[in-house]
Image 1 (spheres, one colour):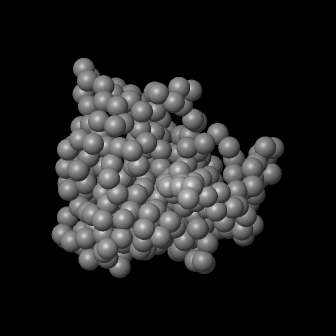
Image 2 (cartoon, one colour):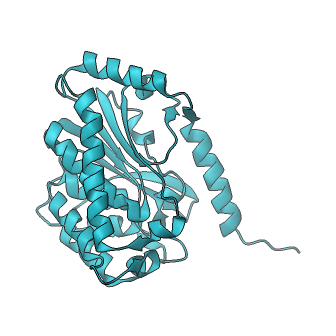
Image 3 (cartoon, helix red, strand yellow):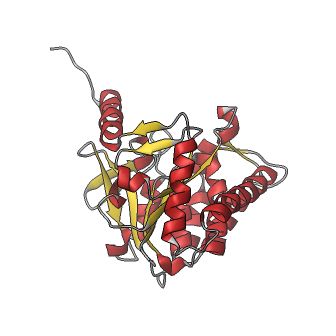
Length: 283
């Protein structure tokens, strides 16, 4: 089987992905997931999953705060706990089970790149993981191989692009948006299982980490994913005829599906970022 997996960025909401990935483990063997593409916090979750260390990612989320402490996003990004968590997730003996793309914004050349970490020496992977969650304002750009990088999610938060070129049986796409997207490649869209989670009612709530909330998000991520996959994979993860038929039925029932043209999104976001980063001078 050639199965793909996409994990978007989502700040605090990334805890949902832990539950979702645990659910995927219940339905599909890890070795069947051949291609993975992730953005932002999804990179850390996805890397832990791909190397069989999902428990370390779960510990990362649960150790950011405790029952009596609230931590805000800037405290997480600037603190030592995130850096230590990345160290815990990485191991010199880790072997990626799949082709693994990590989205990064190359600030030196103002473009988005999708780094294939399966071709990167293990000693450098922690630096790429740190770069994947380096947010402008909160962090300095990460320097790697004479290039400065920021979190790629600021340009492409649902990084399906690198998977478009692969001949996949189907794709599991996990993102945080109430919109049911229709990807511009019809063949790709008809093979994509979309696992979505609601946008937080309060933006501030998505920036606050609290232990009891993280536990609830992980459990909800698991329950929602089980509910979706129980239907689509009811005849087994290898029964493509049933899987395609169910995906088509779900897509046809999505009345307000929004076309997501990857190229347009990249250009628009790059233009916005360039305008903010470019110094203006009248002479």
